[in-house]
Image (cartoon, rainbow, N blue to C red):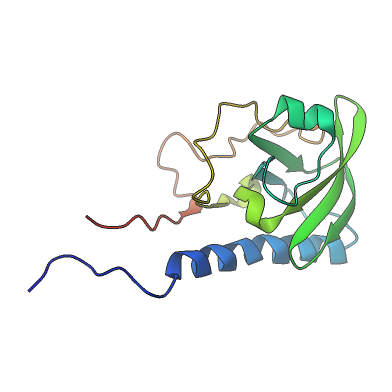
Length: 167
């Protein structure tokens, strides 16, 4: 018998990533349908690749975050529009309003610290390792919760999907 797992001809990793990104779209769609009001203490940290195809952000933000950026949807956001493949939202950065458009395929992390829920996504093969960046630069967050769940094993519900090939 051979102990090696054969390479799959079915792209399971891509299918799962697409399904998990659809969760983000559905959650944002629920917020949009509710009048863009977040219920209770819910708020979202959304990290995305700024250079990914379809991402539209102002030039000064792309210059500041050439690889990856984290935004917060909490108190100060407007015009949330959720579509099948992407979403757009208005946010304030250092008191300057900006409109962002983000395809779900560009998202690398989605976290709701209010309920210890998070999803992390694989970067596509063309992406390089992320550079260090400052988190949550928009003016909407008053929260001090850690979006990445670092620290003690607190039982948070962060789902990490990694389909590395066995050797």
